[in-house]
Amino acid sequence: MSEKSSSSGSDEDADPESGQPVEFGGVLSKWTNYIHGWQDRWVVLKNNTLSYYKSEDEREYGCRGSLCLSKAVITPHEFDECRFDISVNDSVWYLRAEDPEHRLQWIESIELHKAESGYGSETSLRRHGSMLSLTSAASALSSTSTSSFKKGHRLREKLAEMETFRDILCRQVDTLQKYFDSCADAVSKDEFQRDREEDEDEFLTTTRSDGEHNHNNNGSKEKLFPPASPKVINGIDFKGEAITFKATTAGILSTLSHCIELMVKREDSWQKRLDKELEKRRRVEDAYKSAMNELKKKSHYGGPDYEEGPNSLINEDEFFDAVEAALDRQDKIEEQCQSEKVRTHHLAQVPSSDIFSTIGTHRFASKAEEMVQNHMTYSLQDVGGDANWQLVIEEGEMKVYRREVEENGIVLDPLKATHAVKGVTGHEVCHYFWDTDFRMDWETTIENFNVVEKLSENAIIVYQTHKRVWPASQRDVLYLSAIRKIVATNENDPDTWLVCNFSVEHDSASPTNRCVRAKINVAMICQTLVSPPEGDKEISRDNILCKITYVANVNPGGWAPASVLRAVAKREYPKFLKRFTSYVQEKTVGKPILF
Image (cartoon, rainbow, N blue to C red; front, side):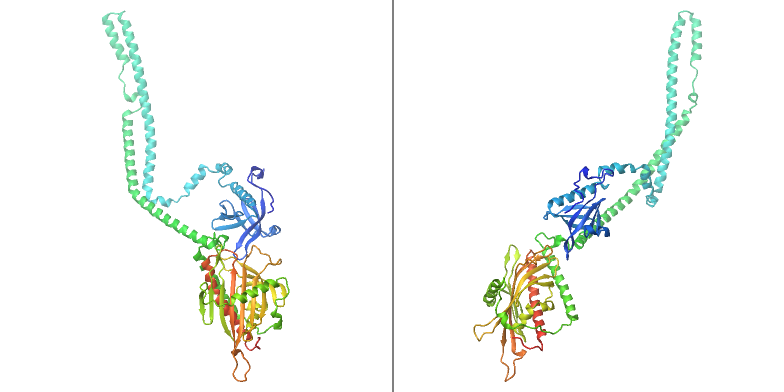
């Protein structure tokens, strides 16, 4: 992965002027879809946004997709050390770095951009905290619909009355407090004056006679203690203020009682509304959870987590249903194609049968001869009484047997089918099975193929890619295909024609990450039986019968549920054999017999 920066989340990786992390980019593998799988993309992290381009050179044409990281969730994969997923709501990107170190570097850079985006960081709180004000809060409150208070307008009126009573009561309390303060001052002055007068009386007693003393004393008392009225103190009418205070407190108590009564009456109504809202919220939350679960299934079906493998999120039943549905779609497409296809009835020039009697002198000659002899020895053996072989299909002349074999959890069941087809010879059947010019006419599972190398006139190396059946991974096969004629040692026995396909390795077709490389060992073995024609008639196609033995040993190259593989094999092999033999019968109608 090439990078424009090595941002790791430290302060040094931030722009000194803006405080934001600098741009970060590089090559990551992105899961595109279940057809194309993982593809390299140029990914750029900038301004809290993750964007991807087909390549670095195509950035000027615009990005192919982007994610805002503000609310993104980054999840390192549990099993794949190079993979991490980024999800925003129902959008998920599956990404793979070239190694665990680069994955960690990407995750840290994304987290840094996310932290500095203004969502949840300290700097964002300091930066945006001052935006809150009483004005904004008041405007938010003022935007609340007044319709929700229509039923409570009387309560608001009473609360307004309480505000008025509070103002009046506060003024009355101030007035009364002033009156009480004035009274306290007057009492204090009166006591002080009285004490002073008493002192003066004692002094005068010693200097005057008793009569004069009594006269002056009475006169002083009348002068010093004139009758006082409450109204005289600061001009406050204490009685009037007391009456008003009493009326105000009575009004407050009455209004409070009214408010309490209104709130009690409305409590039941509000509680019922609250219960209804809570129930509606519960139902909405349940519906939301169900919808999200369904959405995740639908949105991410086809994602890498749903591919075949022991850690696949799809269970065995769902895997089987998906494979069966995909095969049904392929069958319908094939039927439509066959109905629209106009086949050209031509038979390519067939070399002399003598060249098929030897395997040749190429570098794979000894291996090919060994495979041919093994098939002649073991594949033609009758399996009807063998307890290891199970008869799984019987349709007319066709019988299909299976022997269950597993290795390291991978199904390796050998299959063997026997069939008898009228009107064709073993040479014709093997010719159409081997010759790549006719391959796409009858083989419906192949997406494309090419001949990698021609070893001899009767041996070639073929690379072919099979159509993907989701959720299984796509398969490819590299194999040597040889056609042979085995001459019978007994003149009463028929000659045997055989096509043997077995996996090999070749520098021009190395395995790739796009497909899982399967291993095969397949043989089509045919013998022609001829019944004598009546009288002097020439042998016609009515007099010939081809006995076919088809054996297949396939290693799928990866894990898939055993029940699914066996069910698919049981379904597809008989269909293939019937389709192919019907094709050969159709191609040979009206043509000279090729023995």
